[in-house]
Length: 359
Ligand code: UD1
Ligand code: UDP
Image (cartoon, protein in one colour):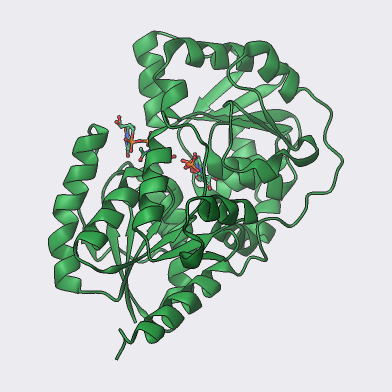
């Protein structure tokens, strides 16, 4: 079986690394990097750290408006998909690279699978929501991380293509969990002790492009009594520079970090404050309290017993949530068994054989 995988943004490199390992045991993978993320800290570092194979094709689209970026990927991916003629195209998550890869496949009548299908925020103003809904409706196979995702797809009439595989980010975390516990170099470099700092990330358009919202988040971080380590996405750095907002003295802004350092920072922090989807889940899986600076989440399972709290961008709510007592309840195994990638590969193989598309 020949599979084209399409990646372009940070969380996709992490998911693809795990998927690729399972796929390449028995099958041929052709990796396409769209170039949506191109900074070393947002791209190369993950290829090196996670042994992700060199991309066979780099589309080099870079940054632009949503329409331009999506259109450029679509335009550039078409000849590559035509030439490669794979049995499957696999896309991950909900970025512009995901949607463009999906459209590229469906326009050429190539079977399409979506990893992390069925997630919904029900907030139609979020660019990612449009990407996920459209990709799910294009795909032939939908790999759902949770039962909630399966329910969403059922409500949209997509049950016959949907499979509960578990979450590929849990596979990835399980592969690195042991190494992460002992990994304290990044804490030393940031001059913080385990349990005595907060960790923050912000990059959602709703928080970076709205000056008032970003100002409230920054004010809340400044009100916390511990150091806040803030690996800053370039989008947020640009927004801060444009707005003239200055981080408070207790907020240590650093460049984005690699995956293992990020897991270590999350694991040892007093709490994580974030608008990242991936990090809400990682904090939950690592047993670190999370404050989500959004009003809704695609991962409602993480809200159980107060492990994750939706605080929006209200200063008092953020501070109150960050300083709450540590939750004590159990964290149920809602993200699968850490073997989702192999399950996905098996489903691709089974579906192809069933359709008689393979030799
Ligand atoms: C994208 C995804 C988002 C995902 C995030 C992961 C979409 C619509 N959004 O958001 O779902 O959570 O990636 O991190 O696809 N930039 C750089 N260097 C880079 C890449 C970007 O400086 O290597 C700057 C550019 O100014 C760019 C801005 O960041 O305009 C935003 O980048 P973009 O890829 O458009 O969206 P993200 O905010 O990264
Ligand atoms: N991440 C990382 N370094 C950082 C910030 C995030 O390695 O500086 C990892 C994080 O641990 C998670 C993934 O990137 O695995 C989440 O990506 P991001 O927050 O960019 O996107 P989202 O999950 O919100 O789509």
